[in-house]
Amino acid sequence: MSSSIAYVTDETFKTEVLQSSQPVLVDYWAEWCGPCKAIAPMLDAIATQYAGQVKVVKVNIDDNPQVPAQYGIRSIPTLMLFKNGQVEATTVGSLAQSQLSAFLDQHL
Image 1 (cartoon, rainbow, N blue to C red):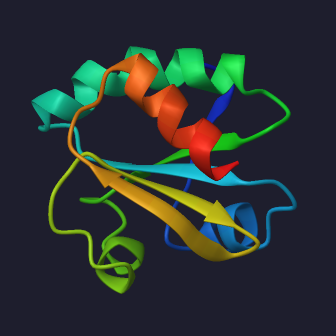
Image 2 (image 1 turned 90 degrees about the vertical axis):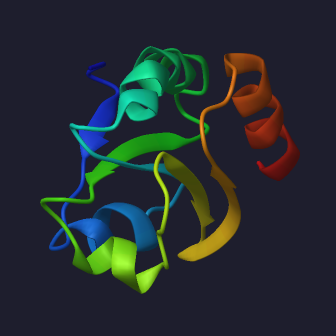
């Protein structure tokens, strides 16, 4: 995992995501999820490409059940873009890197 990506927990979500001064892309994932592992390198690249524009974080849904339940996460991988503490946009399932870049460009 890239040093540009942080792991966020139920306890740190408010500080790291909701109170962030910049937009935050949250990846809801789990160790057993094949598509989650498949998009991990793409998220590393996105974290580098959009450094300074968006913060990329990961929430392990097995270790941190409160935040996924709060946001109605039913399928993974789910990516949510937060701006000013609010959900700006959501995408579910695996994406190509070009699709994720387009998703971010549309909402940043």
